[in-house]
Image (cartoon, rainbow, N blue to C red):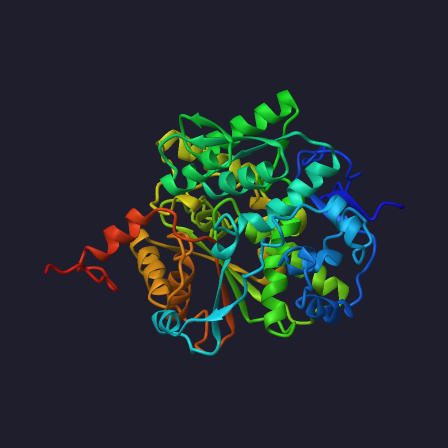
Length: 446
């Protein structure tokens, strides 16, 4: 094949391939697609990535996404040619992923009952729009730019709309964002308006908004930038590259993510599969995905709490009929996802199949935590001088639970991804004005 990259069906029984010069994101068999590269990258690039950190004014070296451009070079450009990078790659002046790396947080480690030196948290809220979404949006919008797209479309619980609108504005594209009415933090909704997006409010939840956005994209030719788009997941892989670079490319024992639409789970899994196949890593870290109790589809299906049978990857043949029956069960019972952690308030995760593949490869697990536990996790991160939203608080809360269950050891090397910063300050105010909360610091009167 002459192309540097292709799209390939993730269903092993199908395996159809597609060129990348189109916006097809689903195979004719109904399965999602992967981006597959036709060249195995040399591990000598590790030194190149390190040298690029002294960026010398090159925004593509400064970017925490495009610094690793050789591993996500679906455009097939000369990665050392600045003019070619500038012609093709979309970047917000090198700011995506630039400040994102793992940090030791001693108070969070104590809360999670972990050793201080083996527990690290990586705040993706330092991205320009305030969440991990910018990693993937830079690559998705790059592909849109390659296709000459003038309008991008997304559904969002808030962070996706902020990121999509920001990159669209910077690239002089139109942006339509579908949101569940009344279910988005004002700080996130305000960003979408601020960056000039056309906001479409949908009666229902995120799943309803996603269905509406995909229908509109199909009917009007808009370009979808939700995580069903495989090019978005390519950018999100760089979250893992930065983790590994910080650890001198020695994989941790665990990587922990909040679980919503499961795009991060999927991108992390694809990243680790590739690095292992390329011979870049020999050890495979285990993944732990943390659901909110009020939006726990993945937890229930993966752990066999519905119909008594676990939903697994099953060598690429997951029981999707069981997923359909589970969704019918939710609809029949009138059960809707409900959590104050609106970023992961998703009942029908679009990337569930890719997520199953990720957990199969990494011997991963899924745990759930309550809103109160997420609030405690969010607050202890804050008391370390770092900011994160409630959904990110699921990470230290989930590690604490897994420590108490004996699944994670105190001296395991654990890296948790804090997916976004706090954009709903009312949650922090509510938490700290209640003296009954674990880490509350109520105001006093003078």
